[in-house]
Every structure is written in C-alpha cells, then in structure tokens.
Length: 398
Image 1 (tube, rainbow, N blue to C red):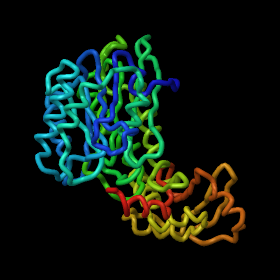
Image 2: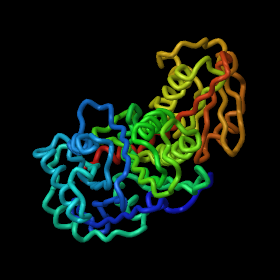
Image 3: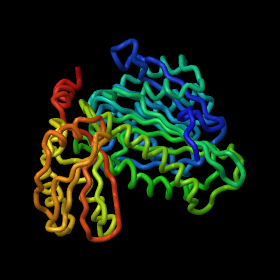
Image 4: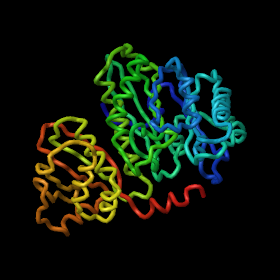
C-alpha cells in the first residue's frame, strides 16, 4: 500500500464539482458540492449518535435502504438541523443534484454542515446546482465542505487485490463539535474496489471505532455527523464477500489520516495531542483512559500553556470509569524535542521543568500512560484548548 494524490477522485470512475451557491455570504467561499460515480455503488454509512439528528441524515438513511447509491450532494454554511421544512428541503437538494447528474433521486445521498436552526435556502441551491462542473479536483470539494476548518483534509492510497490495482481516497471536514460515538463530522470515502455491501458496512463500522471515535476537540457531538463510503467495483478485483485484511488496512489508513487531520485542526488549536495508553489489560480499558485524557479540558488547557501538569492526566484517568491501579501508572511526555518521564508508580518525579516546557511547545505532543497490567496499547487524538476556541464559538453565527 502506498499513499497517492487525488482524494475522492483517486479511484476510477469518480468525478466531483463545487460552486458558490449563496448559502454563505462570502463570494470567495464555495458552499455546494457533489461527488458522483459513473456507475452505481455499494454504499455504507455511519451516523451521529446524537438523538437530535439533522434532516439530511434522515433522507440519506432512507435512500440507503437497499445499500446502494451513486452520488452525494453536500452543502456547507447551513446544517439544515432543527429547521423549518428540513426534510422537504433536504429532499429537494437531492432532487436538484439528481437532475444535474441524470440520476434517480433515491440514488443521491445528502449531507449538510453549518449553523443549526436556520432554514436551508433551497432556492439558491437549486439555482446554483446547474452551475457545477464535474472535474477530478477533489481538493476543490474538500475546501467547499469546510466551515471553521483552517485546513483542507484529503488523502488517498493505492493497493493490490487479486493482482488488480485498487484505489481508496477520502475527504473530511471537522474542527469544532468533535467528539466520538459518531462523532465523524463529515467524511466521504470512495473506492473502486468490488466489495459486497454487507462487508463494506461491517468494515466501516469497525474502523470508525478505531479512528474517528478516538478523536475529541471539545466534547460536543454534532447533529450532522456522518461518514459515507462508496465502492463502484471498477478496479476489477474479485468481489470481496468476507472481511479482507488488505482492504481494511487501506480503509483504516485513510480514515486514520483524516481523523488526525481533524484533531490537529481543532478550532483555535495550536497543537495536536496524542494520548496513548500502553500495557493495558484490554482494549476497552486502554481506549477509555486514553480518550478521557485527550478530552479533558483541564489537560488540554495545560497543553496550550506547555505545562507538564501530569496530575491532570491521573485525574482524568481516575474519573474515566475504567478500572486500573493508580499505584502502577507511569506518565511521560514526548515530542520531536525529546522525552521526559514525570511520574512513576503514581508518584511525581523530580524533572527539568524547562526541558518539559520545550518538549510540550511543539506542534505535536504525546502523553504516554503505562499501566503495567497487560500488553494492549491504544492511541486517541485531541488538541489543546486555546483562547481562540472561545472567540470562534462566541461569534459562530456572524
């Protein structure tokens, strides 16, 4: 497997296009995009766990009833959640895309992101839809789905199946309202692999748990989160009808890359936090502890200040709900500036505060918690909590 360029158009048979429709006031910001396959696809999706779900999720679930789709339409700037005529407008958005692409309405999935509670300006979407020109420019669509993101997020890989070259790529958006349990913000993955719908859904559901469900920016789970995978089979491999390690590794690679991009681009963030538990008794214990530390506001604030306040690590572990022996825990911090151990057997060590600050001042910092209880390791990802996060979210609707 190797990384390649191309994002969602790296795989055979996919095109995409984006345009400024007028949802957003900024004329320079595209806010409407489509992704389409030249042939029908097996499709799988995972959705937010939030009880309050946006209208596009209901339409997408309905259209995915038979596990197939051929296109996705996405708008940014308006979430179409808790809004007047939400499902009616989401359906009209799908109909407009279907008309543009020459497809049936039920072949189009719908996603929205932006401000909650405002009616979707469907007329401007319907008018602008006809202006979309399909190209191979995945990056243009990756930028069009951004809201408070500061960086475009896309990645792709190439690998071999049955002697055939297969491609898999994706784009994502997410910066705030990021917290797991689907918990994927918006993510769209395309592949030319031939794979059954049931296996595709199993793989997606399994890998979401190890990637997007292990990131946290602010503890808020959005109303609009979804991750969709389309597989059109144009690579020509023998159809995958049972779990396949090679395919799963490729899907996990792309989804992990996108998840880490989202965590590092958290609203106002200045650094990525990598929270790793090692030598745990089992995966559930390790994941619970690592996520508790990654999502702790106090620990995130300490990381913003490059403060090696390891007591906040033990505190977050202690209220996580996971069972462990605090008397066995070692804690260390590391980055490309070095490594420093700050606690051993649950007790603080004398350490060089200046060296610790240097280590924690880098763009990526890692906290490692050694439980000395087994041989399982899990990593979760987050970001620091800065003044800018409050500024962004104190004025989000402006």
